[in-house]
Image (cartoon, rainbow, N blue to C red; front, side, top):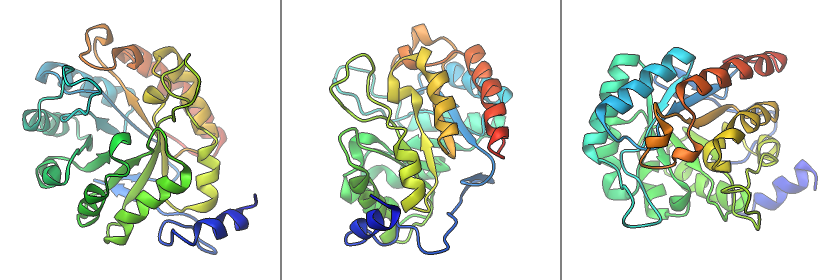
Length: 282
């Protein structure tokens, strides 16, 4: 299917999220960090905010290594109700302290419409997680804010459904939307999900919205984060979302897919030549 045919197919349901004639793409600014421009953005940090010390250590380490933003979960949607659910507002306060120390803008997840105002008081970018990609009341609510949104792909969602979710946000007036590929559920069991890197060039054809990739959730295996990050940048991604923990083996969530600080520094070092070859930089 050609770009024109694909665009025609999508245009019956999607308007604002589609690329127009001569549209070279949009950029989204998060406290001075521009996503979608020449610079490739890396948002890094722990899956969950567990303690003040753990989060501040992670923030300092990723900042020193070259991260552009700090990621971390204060509210954690978990498959099991007995798993660690996050620290809530206390976690948001810790993230805000980490921002004041490092200068890194914060991206963190919001789970419900009722929490948008609270999370928005602390966060510089609101993440809509995979489980909430089709939570339409939440999409409409964040669409009424002017806070940039990171919209993750649902793990059983098509690209059309993903762009339709972005449309809900854009239609409410918030035009600062970044898409994040984080793996889809397939029959494969050797990885946590199947990271769909083909989605990057497809999205670049049909939408002006910036595209990031989460190789941590997309694979579930820390040894795959490096090669899949390199592949994502080579495929045209505007940024990465990477989980980094000071001591991954002690993490309360997703330790098996989290890099330690030394591995993260190695990741950034390995990405720079690829970015340079594409006329971009980290």
